[in-house]
Length: 396
Ligand code: FEO
Image 1: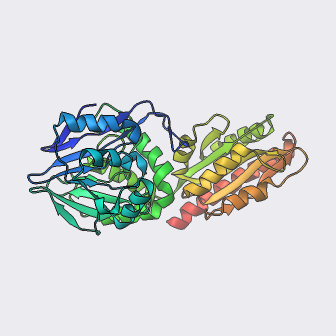
Image 2 (image 1 turned 90 degrees about the vertical axis):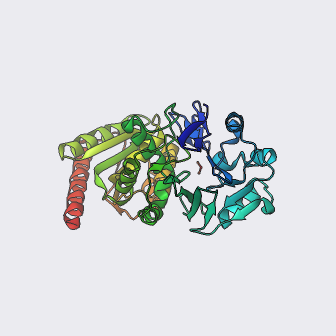
Image 3 (image 1 turned 90 degrees about the horizontal axis):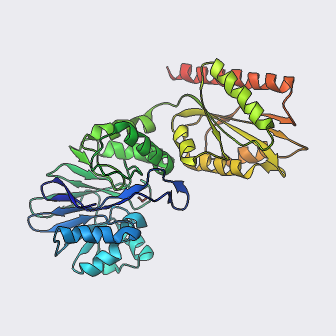
C-alpha cells in the first residue's frame, strides 16, 4: 500500500498484513492486521513514528522511497515490541544520522532486544517535547499499555495522537480511516480483550491522563485510523469502566456427551431466567471470541469432563487464559462429569487466583446426567440469577 497523507506533511507509511493469521504464535488474527508507521515532515526536522514488523520491512522502505525521504532526524519508538520496533535496525542503516526517541525503559529494551547501541537512542521524559520546526511532538509516558516501556506521542499542531498499540485493532483494511464502525468495533474489542484487558486499571489511568488533550485524530499502530476519536474513546470507557453485564460465559469441552448434555440444560435454564449466555465449545472455538465475551460478563461457568485426575487440557488452557486476562467477572462455577474420580474442581479453582470471583456450588457428577443432576443444574441457574440480581441491587 502506498503512502497516504493524513494532514499536510503527515503520512501513513506502514504495511498491511492481509494474510497473517496468528500473533505471538498464540492470538488468532481472523482479519489480518496492519503495522502503521507515520512520517512527519516538519519545517526543520523529519520524524518517523514507529516502524513495522520486520517481515514487512520492504513495505516501509518502499514508502519512504516513494516520498523521496533522504534524511530522517528522529525515529520515535513508542513501544519496543518487535512488530513496531523490529525494522529499526534496517532503518538506522539506511538513515545513519537518525536518533531513536524512546522512554528510558524502552531505551534499555531496544538495546537488549534489537542490539541497538545506546548512543543511538535519546531517552525522553514524560511530557517532554521535541520541535520539528512548525510541528511539535509531545511524549506521554504510558507504562503498561501493554509493556512497561510504552509511550504515546501527540502531534500538537495537527492534534494527532499516536498511541501505538493502545486503541488499536488487528484488522487489515484498504481503508485508511474507519469506514465500517461495526467491523472496527469488533476488531478493536477483540484487541482490547486479548492485549489490554489485563491492564484495565492502568488503561483507566491513561484515559484520565489524555482526557484534556485536544484530539482530532487517533492514529494507532494497528488497524484503521480514527478520524472520529470519540468512537474508540467511548468504546474504551465502556470496556474499562462499565459494570459487568447480565451475561454468563460458558466455555466447555465434552468428550462423550455427558458434559454437553449438562451444558445444554444449564444454558436453557439460564436463558429461561432472562440471562444472556455465551457458549463456547473449546474444541472448535476461536479463543479470541472467548476473550471478547469475557469483557462484559459477570459470571463464568466452566464445563469439563475429567481427563486423568484433572480438567480436560483444552479447558486448562481456557481457564489459564481467563485468569491471565483478568476480566471483570464476579462469579464462577464449574460443571462436568467424571468416570471414577478426580480433582478438577480444586485444580480449576486454584487456577483462577487472579480473579476476585465468588465460587458458586459446582455441579460435578458421575457419568451421564440423571434427574437429580438436572435439578442441581436448575439450582445453580437459580443461584446465578440471585447473585446477578443482588449485584445489580447492591450497585444502585
Ligand atoms: Fe503491536 Fe505490543 O505490539
